[in-house]
Image 1 (spheres, rainbow, N blue to C red):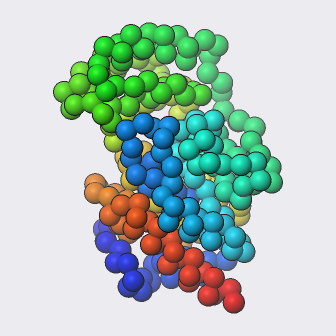
Image 2: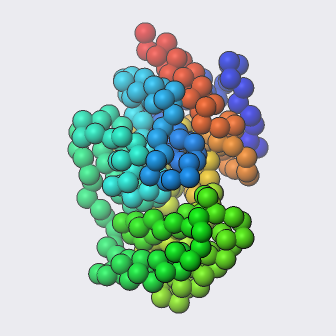
Length: 265
């Protein structure tokens, strides 16, 4: 049962994960660290979130990672990520990784067939261009169709046409739907794979994962006994805690940083 977290109130679950020996704080980006914005590439973490992310990343035995459906190229842009960053990245729903001190990790999954994604982009673009407010997002392993500025009627229509196109040409590609977005990928990884990869790479004793969308539930469902899931906004969730918006995520991360820092003095 997901319960609301109350800022300024002690919370046993947050206190417990603050005390874990080796912590990974894994955050979805769009809708979690950043508000949803009309132009996906204009998304940036709220300043108050960025401050707490930096505080946590500077603490001993504490790693912060952004876990996103964005391709690694785009994720590095929107997170304003640099080569000397302490922040880990998991892009393409867990098919791509960047680790501090290492850089890009070698992909272990199958490559997309030569020309397949370009074929899909070429076929999809004329469909998407007919619908006002619909936008194509090319991705490393497929594509996304965003409808953040479209009407619901337009969204229904363009998604139906794109669904039919992909079903005909790439029926085995993984389909995902989220907040005003429809995605297709030749890779099958979900954010559950990202939780496993981050846990292994950093030898984490616990993971705090926060996300706001349907795709984030892949991660929520594989969290283990000492982990903590945080849902941002409404919707059914396997998370233990819920906050209302990215502004409250900043407050929760601040409370976590305070407790974790105090426990290491």
